[in-house]
Image (cartoon, rainbow, N blue to C red; front, side):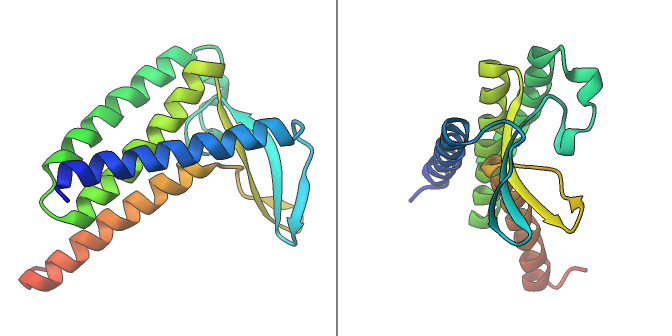
Length: 158
């Protein structure tokens, strides 16, 4: 499998899984009504108009196209890096980031906000609700970091 094929396949899978889980959440969940799954985890439908973890929500709430455009430019840059990456783990990492980011961009263009529904908590403290795209982005960053660490180990560079 070529790196370009790997990149496109992983980005598409990340995007498709993200959109499928969001569609299921939109269908099955009521806004801000937690559905307990197990202690420490609920499914809770919400919408994020800001950046990661809801940052800048007040500033960006009425400008989803600007947020989508900014995120789109960053995503294009990351796609370029991913298609030029020299190692498979880097390519895979960038593909997961691009697929996840594209899922969130699609949400912003379709409904003006990102659909979130994964709600982890401890007692009264809740981690910001997130989605499958966020998981893909996290895993992509982890893959890139691991590729860099393994490369340093192989080459002996600190």
